[in-house]
Image (cartoon, rainbow, N blue to C red; front, top):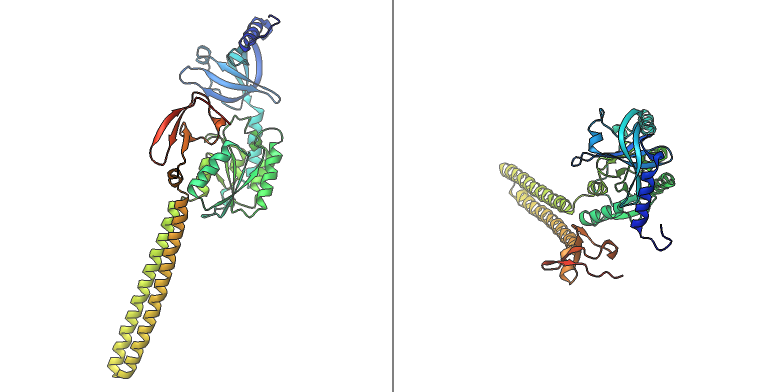
Length: 399
């Protein structure tokens, strides 16, 4: 290599040839545990991570070798692979090119997960009987997650759209790394002391290693001991962590957790309308009941021939009917006014009103762009106005 300035491509190419020429890195037996295993249907390749208690390395098994496997490889397996170390030149990442895989039993990490799960279940912490119902209309919702994360944005945007009258309190924690378990536990303890009606513990997708803090006993016990009903929403839909077994409710994603905890505003309107209908019907029934009583009393007085008492009680009955009618009318007017007020509040939150005042909404790949950090030169975005929309291409990005 020259002593001058090098390009990244030159460095990667040099490393590729060095590794490829090293006989010590060819056809070696490597022991480890399988994680993040993925079968690629189109190419026939198997992608996975091989790890031990201290390190991990990416691995790939091409179709020609994968077709000869006698057993399916899955996460948590402890295996010995025959592999050569190679460099993926484009990204500069070392990986194992695997020729054969021999399972040797259950992996330590998976075994530890099952041990902890059984321990918690034996203590009754995973039983359905101890899971608490979620409040139907929470006034205050606590969100335990990393500040500025995708999970935080997904939950907040969903709650703002579905349930704008709910107050949201964020308890920021670390959701990855060595210090994450203690940080999450402290966040749950702090949230449990608040006046929130329900809590959401959320993290976006990631590898099994990224989600490992949610498989620790300290975090699982903190979730189980939370004094407020708690929903866990960790990773993608296919991910299940230890905390999901001890929480009051598991959601497939952070967005799904927000949808579970908050009723849609349309449903609130429906409930108010149903309440008015019930009150109206109840009032009509009371009026009918009074009319029946009046009719019975009138008939009895007529049979007794007590005309003066009949006239007197007719006046009392009319007065009672008037009072009942006025009370009912006032109640209906009050509820109607309340509904109109709430409806006006909801309309003020309508994004279309904001757009009509000259603002616009920019989306990229159907997601709202809230910062120029999320854009790149050449990106295509959709700009929605108060009336109509247009497509634009990013040619310059500023602060």
